[in-house]
Image 1 (cartoon, rainbow, N blue to C red):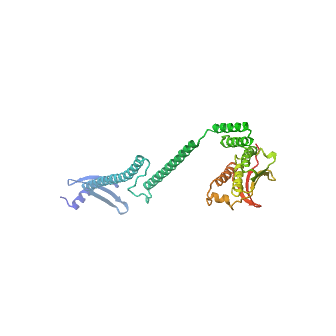
Image 2 (cartoon, helix red, strand yellow; image 1 turned 30 degrees about the vertical axis):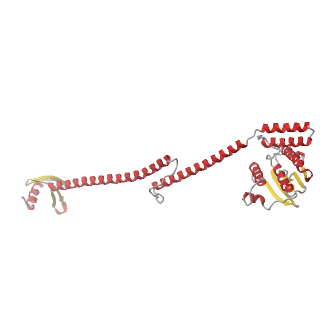
Image 3 (cartoon, rainbow, N blue to C red; image 1 turned 180 degrees about the horizontal axis):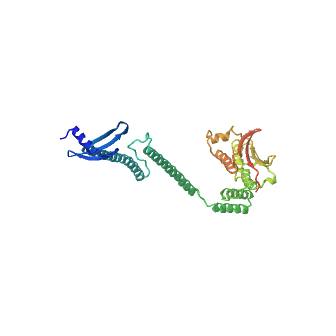
Length: 358
């Protein structure tokens, strides 16, 4: 085996002809060397560097095997990490899918969740919370729809139970009317005829325009019946200019107020009841005012507000007052409606509506 000095001496001989700045692979003593030589002009020196070729190959082999090992190790780590992520994602996805399937299989009953997603802020937490919210909304909608359908069916059943052919009523009343006329009983004939007019108006499905003239015709029939009932205990008077009779009003808004006035002004105290209906235009002729006054009773303070807030039980006339007020506002807007107050020891129901002529 050659010593380092011998190797150096042998390489110097071989590199004498080697151009400056070039390299060459030389064989010395049966071993290959990578030789690089260059001159240093200022010093008239030659710099020669040699490295055993086997050492370079050995280092390259180690580097190659190290790279392969790192690549394999990195690939294994990536595969393990990917599998764990896939397992994590698929597990939570499968839980959500199973809950959806169970929700559908149980007729929209939300199943219990074995995992608490309420505090998670990632996508799985958001998906599960949104699913719970959606399922809860669906349950509420189904419940509301179910209850509404029950109410609807109940209302339809009651309507069918109470349904009477109006033509049967008209024909019966007409028969009574003719019998009364044949017997010379004009009072009974007039009462039956007035009742028939009221029934026709109340059962009519006519959706056409309703006028003050039509309302007064119904009111007249009602007053005829009530005067026969109470005789001299009822005094009724109305004031309305002829030009106002074609004014457009909601159907049946005056008659219930007159009925309410008679009920509280006469039936409860049995005194002579004075009922007055006064209809007039304001000075600008934009709004129409309808006043129904009666003696013998007074309105409670803020009665309408108490009926709305259920401080007073809405029965009979209370429901009718709310109905009139709501229908006026629905037809003409919130600026119009019904007012209840007392004036000169009389109860006053005032309707305010815009003056519209048909």
